[in-house]
Each structure stands twice: as structure tokens, then as C-alpha cells.
Amino acid sequence: MDSKFAPAERAPVDSVMSNRSSLERFPYINDIFCSLSYIFCIFNQQRQVVFANDVMMKSLGVDSIEQVLGKRFGEAFGCVHAHDEKFGCGTSEHCRYCGAIAAILQSHVTRERTTRECRIRRVLDGREVSIELEVTATPFEFEGEHYTIFSLVDITDKKRRGLIERIFFHDILNTAGSLNNIFEVLESVDEHDKQELLDAAASLSQQILDEIITQRMILQAENSSLVVNNLEIDSIDFLETVDKDLRYHDVAKGKQIVIDEKADPIRFVSDPVLLRKIITNMVKNALEASQTGYVVTLTSERIQDQVRLSVHNQSFMPPAVELQVFMRSFSTKGVQRGLGTYSMKILGEQYLGGKVNFSTSATEGTRFYIDLPIQR
Image 1 (spheres, helix red, strand yellow):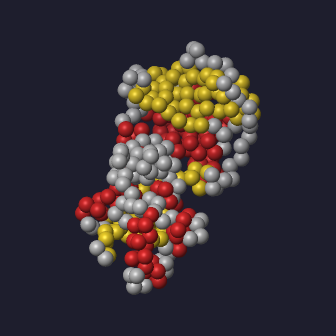
Image 2 (cartoon, rainbow, N blue to C red):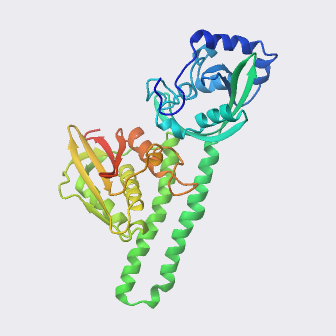
Image 3 (cartoon, one colour):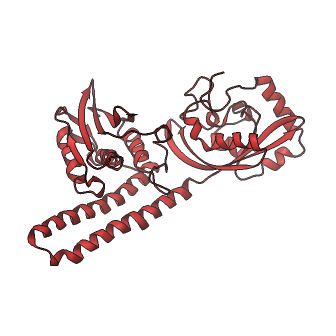
């Protein structure tokens, strides 16, 4: 069987049922594991569920264990990539970077307990959500069969707090420090330099405000309390506003933002505040990925009854980055970062009714884009 990562082979249904029956003969297994307050299950050698506790079934919204028996981790938990390939969870390119599968496979090899962090994008009640988990895989043998005891703890809130602390105590503090430095030297420079410093100060103030608004926006989006205010937008005017906002941003130094002269002027209906945040993040990412002297190009085009706004840069992403782009907390910029692309996805798709995606290659560079309906 073809697989791009973990073994694809599955145990037949009768084997799964046999494993379940065998485990139920283990003294007090139901009493012990169903008394635990966290999600717990047991996988067979093919990574299929053969036992699950009450907490797991309640978390998944299922009434009986038969509804999860034989499924793999991603299939049971609704991972968006679980069915990318014919043989299911563990066999796609994305699975190479799944902490859950990595923990299970490592425990198979070492025959030792293995703990990893796992980011997963899952579909819950028809809505995509991102969660972060701490997973532990422990191998054990019973009646001649090899199994994996698998437990997980949701650490999404812990990670979220870490991100907010990083943003407010590091990023915003640094920006505020730069703003303070400007005002300290303002009185000692001539009029020409003073105006340049005031422009820079205005840009830094806007950066602080934008960061705070972004955090509030993401929290509201995750809590389903974000309000959408649709207005008519002119695509060229909109892109020019984004260009103006970022012209003096730190990440734009030595680089150029241009609007494609072939961009289509399109009038469409959307929320300009949310859309501005999405496109701004696309441009920031493009600038951060660009070397000095590189150009970042903004454009708009009509595709049937949709408008596509896109941001292009000349760099490209290696596979390890490409396959994790929209994961919450994933970032190439270090720990406690990584809300930019995640916020594009949640705001653009769940609130603006669009589709956010990207393409990247060594020859064509990287293009992030959002497709939106012209009329809402």
C-alpha cells in the first residue's frame, strides 16, 4: 500500500473486534480508564482504536465505542487531512509533521513512553477549529498482541496565553520603546528630520494599535462573537490603503511594495476591517520572507463571480513550512509566535465566506490569496 509517511496497512474489522474483546478481559480496564478525567484510548499495531474511555467518546460526541472502533487518530478527531490520501490518517505529506503520529511511531520503535506536542486542524460541527495537544503514547503487550496506550491533554489555552504574553510583553513593548526613543530625540533635530520622525512615530503607534486589535479580533472569532460589517469596497483603493499602512513598517525597510499595474478595479462587498487585517498579514509575511531589494506585489483580479486579492513575493517555502502554514502557533519566527496565517484562515473563511490559500515554488515564488464573493 502506498503511503507518504506512516504504514498504510489496516487490521480487518474482525481483528479489531477481537482486540477489543481481548482487552475487555483485562481486569478492571473499564473501571480504571473510564474513571480518568482526560481523553484516553488504546490503538492496535496498525494505529486503529480498539478501546476508548468515556471522556473521549463524550469529546467526540459519540454514543458508543462502535462509532470509533477501527478509526485512526485523525479520523476519529476530524483532522482536515485525515482523508487527503486513499489509506487515511498517517499516509499524507501533512502527517509527517503530526505530533500524535510521531509519538505513536516512536513508541513502536523504542518500546518506551513518548510524549509530543500536536497541532491539529479539525472540523467540528461543520466549522474548522485549531487545537493544540500534549499527547503521550505508551507501548504495552497483552495476550501476545502489541498495543499503544494513547492519552491526550488539551493545551490550547496554555499556548494561547503564551502567545498573548509574547505579543504584549515582547513585541508591543519593543515597539513602544522605539516610539519613546523617537520622542526623546524629536526636539533636537531640524524640521526636515522632525517630519520624518513624526511619520515613523505615527507608523509605530498604528502598529501597536493594530496588534491589540488583532488579538481582540482573534479572541472574538474563536468565541464566535465577532461581528461582520459589510460595505462596498473598491479593490484598488483598498490595496493602496494597505500599501500606505505598511510603507514605514519595520519589516518594509529596504524592500518595496507595489500594486500591479494590471490589477483589475473591482467593486465588491465585504467587511473592510477584517479584510484589511487579512491582507495586511499577507503583506507582512511576504516582507518578512523577502531579502533586501525584493519586491512584494499586490493585485486584484476577477474570477467569475469572485474577486481574488493576492500578495506575491519572490521567496519560496520549503516543504516543512509549506505543510504547516495554517496551523495555530506554527511560525518560522520562533517560539510563541504564529497567529498571522491562522488568523487569515479563520477570519477569511469563517467570517467573510471566502477561501484563503497559497502557492509556492522555487521558480514562481510565493503567492497568498483570498477569493471572495463579489456580493455577500
